[in-house]
Length: 619
Image (cartoon, rainbow, N blue to C red; front, side):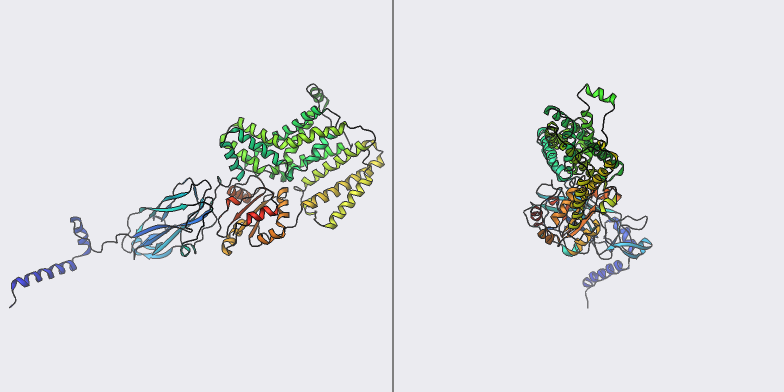
C-alpha cells in the first residue's frame, strides 16, 4: 500500500507542470508584471558589435580601412541602410577626432526578406553585417594608443515584434607608431570583399608641403617666416618658367639709353615692384576663384594682351617704331625721375604673369596663410618680400645690363644687339601663344630633322634680316627683305626652343584618376599621379626624368596616371580640392594598398637620382 505522504508531493508537481504548459503566452506576459518569469524571453544580447582595422598599427600620414562588425542572435535582424520608408535604418555615427579624417561609410548589401511583423518585404541585415570606411591619420597625429568612440544605431526585429531603436557604443583602439615601425595587414577575411572607394579628402593635410613648411617657419617668429618667403622667391627665380624673362629684362635695361648704375638699379627695383603688384592681384584672383596658379597662361583673355605687349616691345627693338609714353605723362614723369620708370613698372607686371606657373607651391603657401589671418597688412608685406626674393636676380641683371648701353656706339653692333633682343622677345611671345593657339603647339617636334630645319630658318633669317640696321632706316624694298628675315629667324628660334620643351612620354599613362586608383588596388600595384599642364615648364622637364632607363624601369611596375590641368574644368576643380593643389608640378604616390604617401609628394622638378631614392621606399 502506497503512503499518502508519498503521493501528495508527486501530485502537486504534476499539477504545476500542467498549468505551466497550458497557460497562454499572453497571460504569462501579464503575470510578468508581478515578477513572474516571461515565457520565451528574448536573448540577453540580440545584437553585438565590435570594431576592426585592416592593419595591426598605423603611422602618421597613412590611410587604412576600418569596419564595424555586427552579429545577430538567431532569428533576429536589423533594418538595412537604406531601408523602407518609415523604418529606422542601421547607422554608424563617426567620432569627431582632430587627427583623423574619415571617408564615406559603406553599408553592406541587404537581403530582402518577408517580415511578418513589418507587413511585407524589407531589406535587412542578419547573422553578420560589416560596415566599412577608409580612414586617414594626419601627419600631426601623436604617437601612442588612442580609443575612438563610435556609435551604432539600429532597430532589431524578429518575425513577431520589433524592439525600440537602440544606440550602442563601439570603442575601437588604434596604436599610432613611428614611420620606422613595420605595419602588418590583419583581418584580411573581413576586408577582402569590401569596396570602400577612394581615400578620404584631407584638404588641410594635402595643401602642399610648402604650406606646412611655411607654417612651421611662422611658428618660430615673423623673422623666420619672412626669411622663408624671401628664400622661396630666390629659388623660384631659377625655375624654368622664369628663363624667358632674362632676355626681356636684358632688353628693357640693356638696350635703352645710357644711364648710371644707380639709375639702372632704381629702374630694376621698379620692375620688381611691377612683379609684386601682379602677384598681389593674382593672389586675390586665386583666393577668390580657387584657380590653380599658372592656369592664367591658358586663358586667351590674359595671354593675348600680354603677348601683344611683348610683340610691340620686340618690334620697337627692331626699329619698326619707337614706344613712347604720351608727352603729358612723360613731362610729369621727368619731374620725378624719368619716363623709364613707367615702362619698367609696366614690364614688371607682364613679367609677373609670365612667371606665374612657377610661383604656385611657394606663393600658394603664403596666400593660404594670409587667407586664414585675414591680415591685409601682413599679406602685403609677405607678398612684397616674396617678389623681392624672386626679383633679386632681375635687379642684378637690370643693374648691370645698363652697362651695355654705356658702351661706345661706334658701328652697327648696337643695332645688331637690339635686333637680337627684338627677335628673342617676339619668340617668347610666340612661345606663350602656343598655350592658347593649339596648332602652334601640335606643330612642334623633338627630332633631329625638325631642329635641322629650324637651324636653316635661323641662318636664312640672319642672312636676310639686315640686323645691323633699324627697320625704319631702310628703304622700302629692304624693309620687305628684313621682314622676311625676321619672320624666318623668329620661326626657326621658336621651332628650336619649342621643340626642346616638347618631350615624348617614356611611360604608358592612364588619364582617369579614379580608374587608375582602382586598377592599382585590384592589381596590388603602387600608383603615381602626375598633375601637369602644357604651360608648366617644370612638368615638361619631369618627362626627361621619366625617360631615364632606371626610372623608367622602376615606374613600369606602377600604375601611372597623368592628369591635365592646362585649363580649368569641373574635374580639375574636384582634383584640386581633393589633393590641395595650388601650383604645378605635383606628383603624388600611393602604395599597393591604396594608401596615399603624403611624405613622398613632389612639387618641383627632380633629377633621376633623387626620384629613384624616393621610389625605393614605395611598393
